[in-house]
Structure formats: C-alpha cells, structure tokens
Image (cartoon, rainbow, N blue to C red; front, side):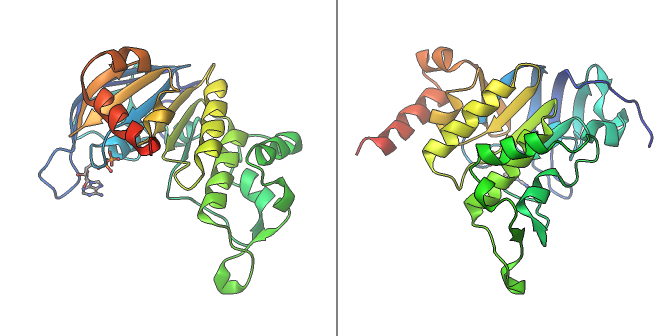
Length: 253
Ligand code: ADP
C-alpha cells in the first residue's frame, strides 16, 4: 500500500483539468476549474453527454486527468494511497454492485471492513428506504430461483449501503432514476441533512432535485458553464434557466 494517507478528505481541487478517453481524440472535459470544500452539497446538472459522469469518475479517482491537476487536501490525487482514499468515499450509481446469495441486510454491511458492525445503523438504513420488511430475505438471481429485486429496490439497497457507510465524500450519480419523484425527493433531502461535515455530490437531470442543493454546477460540452445557488442561477438567462423552464413544462399538463 503505497502513497500518502489523509486523515479526512476535506478539499477537492481541480485546476485546468481536461480529460479524453483512451484511444479517442475528443476532450470530453475541458479545462475544468473547481474547488469543493467539506460540508458542501452540490448538484451536477446538464444535458446527457455533457461530461457529468466523467467528472464524477475523476473525483472518485477512477480516472486520472489527461491534463491539469487534481488535488485532495493539496496533495496530487495520483500520489494518494488508494485504500485510504477508498475508505473515505462511497458512491451510488446506476451500475450497482450486488452480492447475490446474501440477505438484504448483509448486502448493506458487506464490504465495509473498516467499522465494527452496527446493528442499529443497519436497521436505520433499511428503514430509511423501506426495505426492512424483506431484510432477512436472500437476494438470489432469477436464474437460481430466488427473489430478485426490481431496479428501484436495487437502488434503495445501494442507498441504504451508502447511508450506513456514512463516508466523508459521497457521490451519487443518478441514484434514484428508478424511484418515484416523492421517494427521490425524500432521499435527496436526507443526503442534504447528512452533509454537515461531509461532501455530497449529486448528479441529476431533474432540476427540481438540483434546486434543493446548496450549490449547482451546470456542465455542458465538457465545461462548467454555471456555478451558483438555484436562486442566483434562476435570475439570469442561461442554461440553468432554460432547463428549468423546459422541465417545468413536463409538469404543466
Ligand atoms: P453525462 O454524464 O453528462 O451524460 P458522460 O460523462 O457520460 O456525460 O459523457 C461525456 C462524453 O464522454 C460523451 O460524449 C460520451 O460519449 C463520452 N464517453 C463516456 N464514456 C466513454 C468511454 N468509456 N469511452 C469513450 N467515450 C466515452
């Protein structure tokens, strides 16, 4: 286990960060400058293909910048100890990891080798996503004849896991896309209340969800084009207001 260790991820900083995928010529992130401090809750919004997921993968250390510098607490990200870093972050995305043949409950705490098992917290996490009534059921693939969960239930499970783990950096990439809007709002509000001493980054294409965050970052064509609160961004003409007005039409029928 090489590299520098951190006691707590507190400041993320991207300076002129550009990224292109291997064997491609197009930069999908272009000179991103961004500073995120502990305690902030941030929504990334923007149309599909703008670069939100790529940016999130850089922040999580799953990709490294092609150009520019990414530092955590002032230390170049690539020189940090990987397991120390992983221990401080958790992510919920559409690509869910799942442990089949284990119970729902075990799926919540499995893989968290860092903390002693906390039964109360497991129950709270399952309660939060309303999966407690099936907590002791085994998750089996359909192919082996057990209960299989719906897309929404898998998302709830992933959310319960992240709530249980309670890490310093939490990144959610469209974690609630299979849930109904009411459940989504409830979950997002919970993450916001968690964010006192941690950083929450939430990727969503729903402006109604983004509007709940303290800070909204609008990403388009690989660039950050707006950065501010909902109240600030809505005052000016721009991509955020355009998306807001466009989506408002969805609800006026
Ligand atoms: P968003 O999350 O905003 O929808 P993405 O970060 O997923 O945007 O995608 C940004 C751009 O990067 C898109 O043009 C997409 O086609 C491209 N892209 C995403 N993943 C890969 C990959 N693995 N290889 C090559 N190009 C990719």
